[in-house]
Image (cartoon, rainbow, N blue to C red; front, top):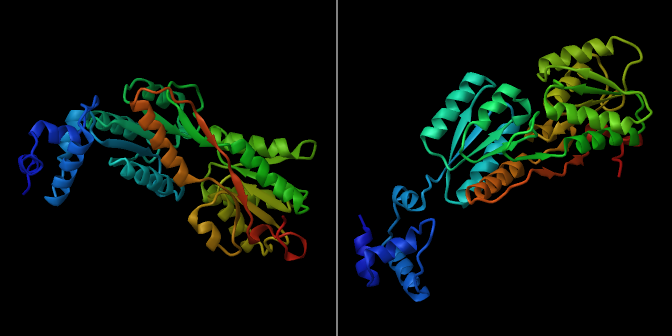
Length: 335
């Protein structure tokens, strides 16, 4: 196996020079450009791979990022994880993924684990679901941390999110544009900032028009039951804006069970644009939440934090994807 000594002999330099070129520390030492090029060519020719451990010790970095997610069974979070991994891989970093299943004890255990592994930074997804106790727990750590989702209370760490309130407005505006009047919003738990912001956007866009929010616990099962109870009362809605695509699937299911044609009898809009949305029948109109981009941006923010920069929260713009669940009059898409 090729060693650093072999590279030094082949390039005609010292071992220290090879180390400075291939494993620069936090404060790089200057090396002449032609010398650095000679070292890299020798390393490439000899197929030498610097030790990640040695490189980490030199830079005082582990090369690890911790990713905490609340539920990998939810299609939204694997997409975020892919975004985190893709961006980390570009930065020659590895990702430790921790799935809390929404349990505070698991969150505490994983935070302790990530601290013991000396990760360079932590990305925490699902921050909108954390309560004050969990958010205060995060405040106690000194490892740079980036939240995905706007937290319910102010914390010292930055977050990245989409503009959920604007997304709620876009979904509601679209239903109004295709001529729907009795629009119900099937919400998730309003204790989550994501759900509260989407409901607020719905109410904003309705303006002086009647608004009705049917709140669920966020699961398709509860969403189905809540919407079924609402459909038992007059006047029957002619449109549903569901706060997530999972809840939109529940709306499509109850429509089928009640022999309601979508979109003729009931137009349905979701939120998130999970991969399955385009393959449902009818295909689901939804507000896109760029999960992959959220993950990538979170890693970029974490890198800036580790470099000592001041990092402000970021909001990414949502956009509507129109599909067959909201075809307009005459079976046409609305511009």
